[in-house]
Image (cartoon, rainbow, N blue to C red):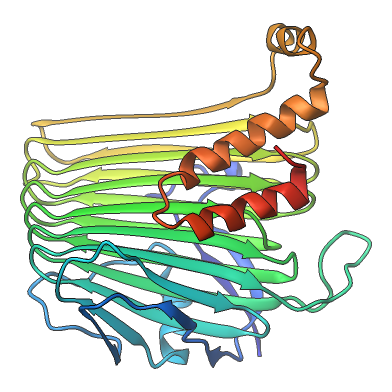
Amino acid sequence: MEQTIDVNPIPYLTWSWLKINKDSGTFDFSLCENKGNDIQIPAGVLVSEGKTVKTELPEPENSIGKDAAQIITDAAQGKVYTFEKDSDQPLIIRINAESNSATHNIIHAKTGVNCKVIIVYEGGPSTPSTSSGTPENAAFSGIITKVYAEDDSNVQIAKVQLFKNSVYQIDDTQIVCGDRAKANLIQIELGGAHIDAAFHATLHGYQSRFTSDTAYICRDTQYVDMNQVVVHTGKKTDCNMKTDGTVKDDSTKTYRGTIDMRKGCSGSTGNEMETTLLLSPKAVVKAAPIILCGEDDIAAEHGSTVGKLSPEMLFYINTRGIDQETAEAMLTRAKITAAAANIPEEKIRQEINNWLDAEIGQD
């Protein structure tokens, strides 16, 4: 059943002619549930079915839009991972997208618990591409990951996307933090045909903190659309959002980043920075970094830059025996490996390196 929906709506509309207020897509939403494979479950983690948890925290919000969130939620029964004690070992989940599917997972960190989660997206149908480079029979993968970080907890979550170019994905990470809770999100976006990657973090508790590090490669005819939102409601909360990637060939990348300082979040701080290395005159890059301020006693800053290799830098590199193509591959790779270095599992970091070796050349 094909249906056209809006995805990744910007929290507050800007000029429509910029074509950055939202993404739209037509997908087959005849979805089956994909719970993924639990490759590694640490001691002290309870696994159950469902889409709710017992908590006094407010419900986390979505960034992918009401329609997309409802479609994915309705198609999945849901799975809950409850961390009841500290663990140095990460929970590892693998999600393979061979057909149209929906996944709804909850990560619930109890009070004072330190935990780590790694979710790897892989696979996809082996289908031939059309002359435009778009796969003929792409699979759709809809993902919702909710994270409840109770008071004084520390949650580290990494999402690594290694899909074939035959996958369309909508991926939403929804986070809410209690008092003094910390949440850290790493996103590595490498494969896929059309990717809508979003997160929404609510800093509800006093002195809660959120950090994100997103790295991506957008190439060939890929379309990567990002919508990142952090809402400050608790006092003395802090966020730091970093997004860094490369855009080349005939690809398109859209970035929306919003820090929303709401009334009552006095003493809060926020920072967002998005950097793009542009390697093709045919590629399309759009960005909208936003700060919304409803409180006087706050400090926030943002920025977005798009650049290419300067003649001076190319000359410097060439004098050391490195040609332009190799230099571009090195810089592209460095953006990914810098973010991946913080993923707490050597095997996953090696998978990323293997993908880079195969797709952009060995280091």
